[in-house]
Length: 229
Image 1 (cartoon, helix red, strand yellow):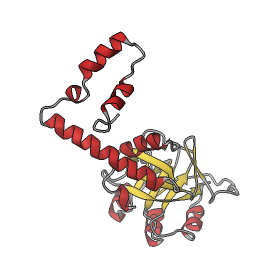
Image 2 (cartoon, rainbow, N blue to C red; image 1 turned 120 degrees about the horizontal axis):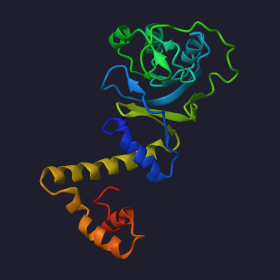
Image 3 (cartoon, rainbow, N blue to C red; image 1 turned 180 degrees about the vertical axis):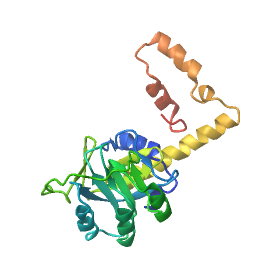
Image 4 (cartoon, rainbow, N blue to C red; image 1 turned 60 degrees about the vertical axis):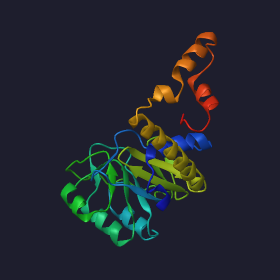
């Protein structure tokens, strides 16, 4: 998804709020196995129940560029993906994996190069074998969120977001606008014009002293689109 190439998950999160799109973020702590890795693609859900076969079944329906979203219930007592899952993902054209759980085979994952986002490394794999849920390939839970193939996965070093596919173009367009404004603000700070000056902060404090209901967000909106909220 090329539109995400120059963006970040923080500006996409801001854009979701701006667009009135549900903000669905993976719980804090998820990170790429290889620093700097990024992901963007349609969600390919799979609920893990202790055996790799659910991933193989999911890969059979994958479209090039999909992101396997692995629901392992956030378990910290087993790793649920490793080198074989990553190799099979690559063979299926899957862009990467977002795992609500742990991974293993870290050196091999680095070598394979398929981006994997998880909550860390852990040597033991599953020793359980639970009954596969009927909808194991229809949706994946990720924290409090439910992810389906109607969602897009966006991931970078700050975390993982899930955005409804029918709103993602709108969200990414707004995220691009937010990023341009923020970059302009940053350049002005580097040039010596502090954020306090850019936001007329003294004027805001004076107005707030007269009207305690006067919020900073309201103040920024009075200044217009040159300042990002």
